[in-house]
Image (cartoon, rainbow, N blue to C red; front, side, top):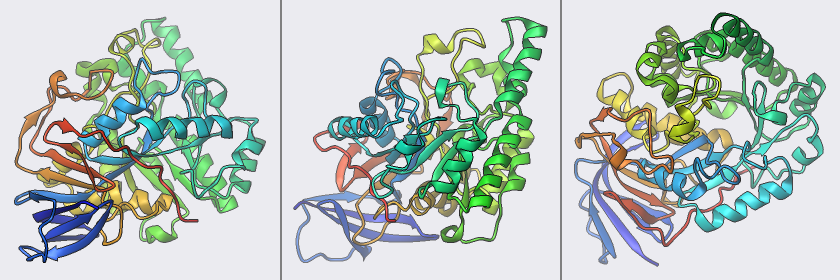
Length: 447
């Protein structure tokens, strides 16, 4: 069993900051020690972390890694590689691959594939359709992160719009339900009006008016109403509007919340003016909206209405993104840069380090009941990240690890940089180098 000692780190964990040493033995955190503690043995490896932050590994509860079937955009190997370069040690991946993950057999095939290639820990959502309730109810909540419902979507038969189906899922599922909320009828009506004005040459800056705040609120309101009616564990993904914040509450301990909320990094970084410089590269669903919406989301994060920060990492090829508005797919890569981007809010005085760790590490672990991860605790898996807060760098195509080899953040400067990432005690990434001899593990969940 190997040992690694991390010395003189500023540990950010559970609302506190502490300069300490940390001992890893094999896969787990063995001891958190006073700085300069004299061990009775010499560890196999020692890392001097003076001046660096030591954080729990980030748990990203919403990614699209595109495998199987869409591997020209991304795949489990490349995207998990990018994830650990950014300090993301665990991810939960979405079912809209090809084929779509809507049966237990297809779900297991994803797990089998990830066990061979994923460098980060992993879980996969079971996807809902209008007609697969029996398959959904077979899902094991101890081994699968949740059920995903597209309550507004253009991804073929994954749009769940049958009211009876929705009621059945919300009333009968013992698992957490994660939802993409946009009202399809509202969106289609907005598309019709845009086409009447512009034909097929709709400018991308109309994206937040087509996939509008009204469309988001209508669908989110429906999801919250159903969850309240049936006491469902509901997690509303990638919120994008100020109006939706009225649906969520503050002052409730996370352990007692049945309805939780997520915001994605791009909805905090960008607003509608950025379409004029970044165009389709920041075209996501739900759309990036106004500066007022962006500021309201940040405030809701601080107040506790929003519980989790994730990415909705969804790569496409650059060629695909350079198409006209209707032909350009929505989504983009972010998992390599999410922690760095959020820590930049701390450097600018807008968020605390403790809050970022809470929203990106602790809260996903608590909401999804992830076993023995998300915290720096003795006995937990050693999923850990070292960040140098004084190591400026610029995002460029030369330092990207995404298979698609582009990012909407190219040209953006950051003051902090991830230097080391441990996955299950294994140093998987260090100063630009990857150590791939060990793979990530399947996440498990307490029920």
